[in-house]
Length: 358
Image (cartoon, rainbow, N blue to C red; front, side, top):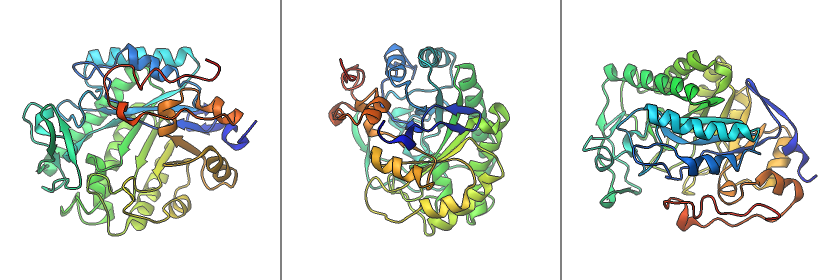
């Protein structure tokens, strides 16, 4: 077998994983009207049930916070039923699946939300990109600053979504604290210009994320809760003046919560910010560390064997390779994904990539 460290079993919180090859959350915009998961999505995820763990795509915890056309939600009964098709299909093939829940924050747009203005920690718009709307690409809007008195409602919304995810048959949840969406925008000081209690110090900027973690852990048990972070990612106009210190502090707070894992994006998708965040976070965080972004099977195997990380979440390779663990084990070539179909409707570029021996 190639890459043996990738195939060493891993106890990830309450789950025993047969391998350390995790499917990263990947927005694919295939949900039906009403943001309802469908049979096409059930096939997509069940085809990838050989992963040690599947982390399903970013899913709206609360209605009215759409950041992508046709992304799924987990706030309605129809959505719960749709996701149940997915989890049943994955479990029938022996897989394990978490749901990533999120709030799009200032990455939302009024044209996607019946005229509702996006919200954020401060009235600062995303400026390094545009967003896709029913009327074509548009600049991001200036978000409305959330009042302190509104934040308990955000926490309650995540808690409700966590309960809905349990009803839908998931094995746990991942909280999306990355990539400039709401929880991340509170963390990093490029987007958060508030004063106390939710702005300024590391403690204050981490408060909302930690409140969400504590709330959903009461629903699931903390050993079925993971968190994704992106200290260096400048996507959605994000940055921080001292990311190593901020995320070292956050890691120390997470140590008190006995989570299933911490999911760390190691770099910047736009290539603007550089640095090593794995080493300081590995030093600060005592639990299971999953890393992500640009790994080959060989690099992932080497880093796990060296004890630098515990598992790797693969994104792009899973787009085109439903049988990725088998290909890694055999050292087989990988299918190349077609970026033009990443967000296109329908099964093309989604469910039509061949497995080995087909």
